[in-house]
Image 1: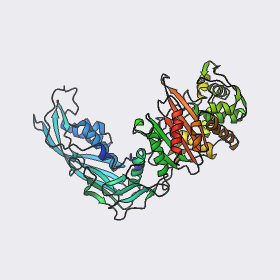
Image 2 (image 1 turned 90 degrees about the horizontal axis):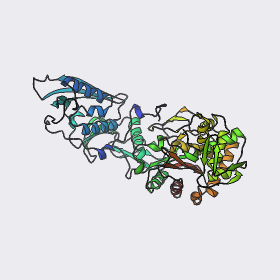
Image 3 (image 1 turned 30 degrees about the horizontal axis):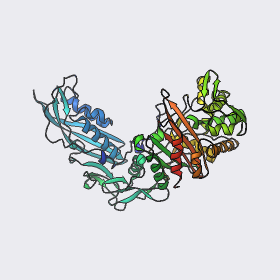
Image 4 (image 1 turned 120 degrees about the horizontal axis):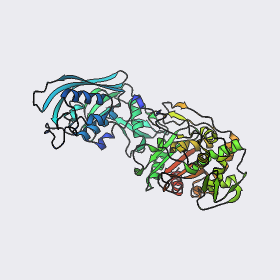
Length: 541
């Protein structure tokens, strides 16, 4: 979420990240022999602390407070330590960690190393507190004292290439199933992990983490090798049979279709799909170019002309228009003090539906100027863009639409520029609201409720009826014609410039039947590819 809200949920009181994912990203440094003192750096430049007690005390504080980067800088292998500390914390998903110094051997004058012991307590679940002692070594380098990094700092039995995982079952069982009962996550020796193919990579931490949070009697911390084979159970006991699978809202068919659609696009692509009846999140997909951060769920972008859905709601509800109302669509127009242009076309005298289908900026800039200063915000509120939910396992942000600060900004807001922002999830919710005529509460789980932090009430049915006509015209005769072969699709395209205006984000927001969707393509400079990605997603469904 944006800093103003900070309402994204941390599952089970801690960030829930895929337990087994860490294997692919790090191998713990062996930390074999004590390293030589660092050379070539001044005392000011070198990391660490000026005395042994400060070095270990600060390290333990950063470790306890889940600050792996700061803790890593207090070791003699910054990169390996930070990665391993972060990955272990994410794997065990504790609600709290306490690390305390229990013994420190005084360093003799001129000594370059000394030893000690600290204790660690992981609160993993209510009533599940894992405590043990850890021997450590401090070394001096560059005039500073550092903690000598070794895997044994995480647990005294941990060796090079090994890691800690949570296991809830003694043999592989289905831990999470999709809404149709198809397996998505399994639990067993080696921890909780996605099924082969990892069908929902962007949601793997949410899915596996919820298994850990919801685990019943079966709960164990295991030491596993680099291949995920269990070496030893260090704490607790896994269940012999495994718990009843959790049921997620995802549809494996929709998720596979969404992932294939975005993977087929070369640039940064993201796609979110919702069930308009239940609010089930059917699919969340990003391709490699979009990165691993879940931008589809909380990345805010200017929505461009896809926001004309909200402008239309405002114009119909507040200005008394309908789809057949006459409007003007010049190629260029001075609206207030702003010069607004279309993308190389003009329609002249036309009606609202045609101006919407062809995405006429000059029409919608003029419509926005005629609204009250908070007119667009009210419409955005009714479409869910300013709503807020706590969905277990997900950090989400739907959008940010505020009253225009000036008339010029109000004109730009009318076609989704200005300060208007939305995420792919927000665009999907907007489309789902139009399709269903009701407020949608998105959910990832059938077993765990979404918390409504800030809800919304949808526009009147009569208003949405007119908007649906216009969204259908986008596909039959407007800018979304590339989706016409995908069934009875309703939608709205958008191309939103940002920064210096040389790049633009492409959007296609819409629905077919009970499936609402939003496609966002960063730097595509055109909405056409977004329509094509949506069509590819819908085809196999």
